[in-house]
Amino acid sequence: MANLRVKLPGLDMKNPVIPASGTFGFGYEFAKFYDINVLGSMMLKGTTLEPRYGNPLPRIAEGPSGMLNAIGLQNPGSEAVFHEELAKLRPLYQDKVIANIGGSAIDDYVQTAKLLSSHDMVGALELNISCPNVHCGGIQFGTNPDMAAEVTRAVKAAGADGITMINTMIGMRFDIKTGKPIIANKTGGYSGPAIFPVALRMVYQVSQAVNIPIIGMGGISSGKDAIEMMIAGASAVAVGCQNLVDPYACPKIIQEMNDILDEMGIEDINEIVGKSHQY
Image (tube, rainbow, N blue to C red; front, side, top):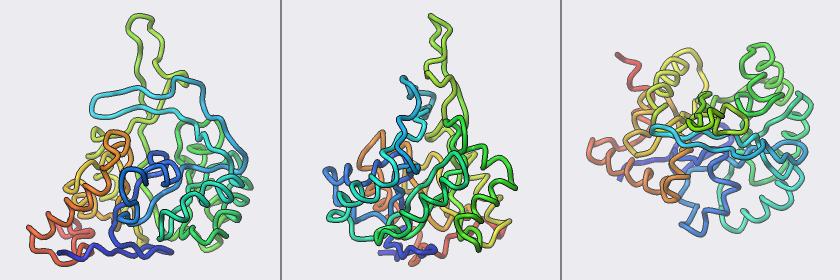
């Protein structure tokens, strides 16, 4: 059996598989399906300083080999996540989690980060500066390098310890009878297997330009996909849309990764990280 252990800043993980933020709730919801302690870590649902209802309904539409969503960061707010959601997760999960933080202003990120990082279950923070479905904040920070640097520096003076990529890609669907967009927000974030080759390309390029670890995501739906993402340069992987298709997706992917590595005669998964860079 191959060694699947990987290390990221603040996280010592038994394997590299992490459910992506927004597709796994606050973790305890999936405990009725399987022992969530098999996971390397988990990204909590995106959290903002104050509670958010999110975007108007409908928020989801299917697409070819994927789905559109425009949830709009609906969440109960940072205080409720700290005192209630993490309290529900604590008896069910023994390892550290990654808190995902969103905001409309830099100070929102700072205050939310200060609170959630003080919880003993939180090993790392993920700054959501690329959400395409909120009308202020989110992607406005992510598409401006100076603003991205400013919000990151405000939360952590030394800068980022890693990168998670990619987020969804903006898309649309229409009702052919009425001509109206199916999603009330008009556009939504497209995710699922259809974007996997794009995500691979981006992780491959970015991993050669930075010296910090990358959590690669975008359309991963099998152990083979996860291994391919790590070959592209990711140090760990996150599984998103597939959790909505199959609640058992993550444990299946972990087992598939182990089986494939055994077949390949690879004893340590870290050996494959960035293997593509030699060509």
